[in-house]
Image (tube, rainbow, N blue to C red; front, top):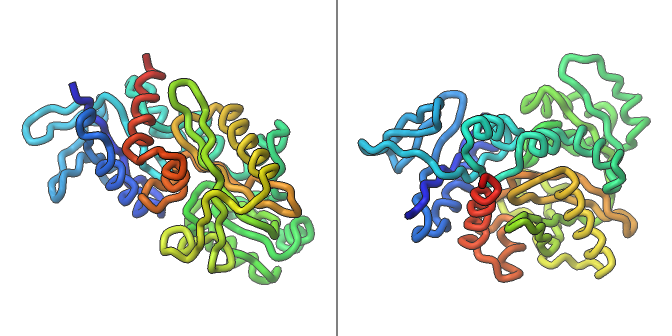
Length: 327
């Protein structure tokens, strides 16, 4: 019997537009012989099953819906929400209470990695990887711009502490511009992280768990046409992405080892993507993404295809892994 799969999309952040595109791709490629895929919009305004121009209200008591006169209960959830509440652990807790399996990391792993400052502090404290020096600033608190710049140097990066897709991110080259960069980040999150600039080669590595085994994918080198890997570089083609990355075998092995170790030690599940900067032949972990982009052009699908894993296979493995883990 085919399983009913809810592809959750939308969310409450600036990344919602990206999430809708990811959900379209997941629905397109999920094996139609095994699954009946429903797109489910989740936002502050509504929870609803979306079928073309039609919407069907979703009952939050049991995460079910009446679709065309038939009650639909879901066997599993495919998480395609980038940002809150799908990437920070909130919905994971809800699904855990209902006993509905889902494709992404759980409450703790999602919440931990969603906060860049907390994630990097834990990764550094546990000795899992090198990380950039950083300072977390909260909206409304007094900020000593000079002290921050003295600690981190110029240029530096400012971005929302809890967020992604480079929304609200800035590269700051003068101390006088730090205040406005923080204000830009605060438009997306009440916390901002200021990080030292690491000149070097930017790479990223996908990883997923299936049948009890962690699989690390080939590394992609990112060459942005803009000053850094911003929104345009990520989603409007303003970057060159090279898989496998043009780095030594030693660095490749080291970054893949770190990726697998971080994924396992933080208790992550489903699929993730971990970003690095290689400075003077040393990899520095920049960020852990537990709901990476899922379009045909996105990095993790590119990496999977390079080793013969189709989107149908990749998405199917995420669903099957979630079902197995709940048994």
